[in-house]
Amino acid sequence: MSDRRGYYTVDEVRAAEAELFTRVPAGMPMRRAAFGLTGVVVDELRSRTGGVAGRAVGLLVGSGDNGGDALWAGAFLRRRGVRVSAVLLNPERAHGEGLAALRAAGGRVVDRLDAVDLVIDGIVGISGRGPLRPEAAEIVAALNVPIIAADLPSGVDPDTGAVDGPAVTADVTVAFGAFKPVHALAVPHCGRIVLVPIGLELAEAGLVQLDPGAVGAGWPVPGPADDKYSQGVTGVCAGSSKYPGAGVLCTGAAVVATSGLVRYVGTDTEVLEKFPEVVASTSISEAGRVQAWVFGPGGGTDPGARDRLAEVLATDLPVLVDADGLTILSTEPGLVRGRSAPTVLTPHAGEFARLTGAVVGADRVGAVRQLAEEWGVTVLLKGRATVVASPGEAAFVNDAGGDWAATAGSGDVLSGVIGALLAAGREPGWAAAAGARVHALAANLAAYEGWDAGAPISATPLLGHVRGAVRVLREVGGGSEAW
Image (tube, rainbow, N blue to C red):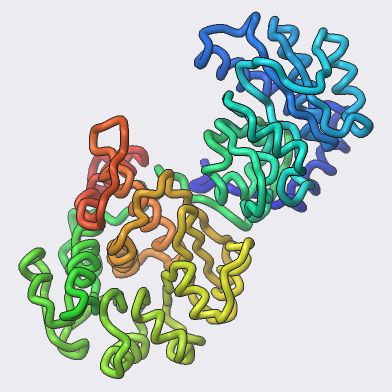
């Protein structure tokens, strides 16, 4: 079983569909998709209304194949006793066979939807771009029932997840044949995502998400021959008298993420007060042996900070640079460009703009890949959907499952977690993606903490749930015993 889920661009899906059409009768892929869509709608009707027969479903039908999928699903639903009505947004270009099947099954074509239990969004397919047109936008805005999107929520870009105007926010999205980037980059618009196989043969994807069990199975834990040094020694140069909390959060995250040793470089006595297991020194040269460095959170941008960053980057060790360290690199990129040892940069959108001189833009994956290739580093772009790219490798994406980590100091925790994984010998792309997964889960655990409703958190409780997040993922990955 693969340790990752692949997301395929429109061009990749179209190529796979073209190959499929040479193997199966015409119309079969659409009917497979529609049959799977019907099953999801039936399940939703049962869970939301307690039954299927006699319920009412509305179809919003555009001119593309997704409109055909919706029409065929409407025909299948009619056979289950569901009342089906369809609004054709472009009647002259509605899918002919699908429309005939709906009418033959007793479905109605209407100018506007009456009261329905849910709606199928078949407005725009994966070839569509841009926001909803005014008529469709007005209909969608007036809905107050659940929406099931056929393949993707209309108005959301399938390859970038970008939204630049009116768009559907679905409760469930039924992906046909393959997951597309939109299903990872715009989860708030997609809702719950269900994959319906239709027989596509797909190559390795260029955008992937680590399976939660794979993160847990690959997380470093001590074995019978391990000691504090063999598990990885993380060096942390973070925090200052102005921002002491950054040093505490970053160092603390490295402490709780793995079972090795953490060395702290700085003058912040609060770090040792909070984490007495840390070994502290006042300079990088005095720190002793480490396997990876974390530099930047709250460390300042003065000449002394610049020299310390240059010192750690001059080593042959993995280095993660965040926060103030990124600000230094934005004015002196030569410190890191062309570096042979693994280097991870973890910017948010503003820091990314400072590094590149341009805003991220709609294509976040493309922008991150470009920076990674040009600088020869691994780049993690923070956000609800975190994107990680390394030169010549598939990019990683991780939807956080919530927005609870959008709080001051959250990035300091993430840096410490990833730094500990680098010190434990994990590859930089995997370390960044796995660290982001644990970080997001820790934020969700902190926000809910046994309750049905979440509450805002700060970085301190997020840090306190990192171990719990690792534990959850290790249980999913079957890692109940060390080794």
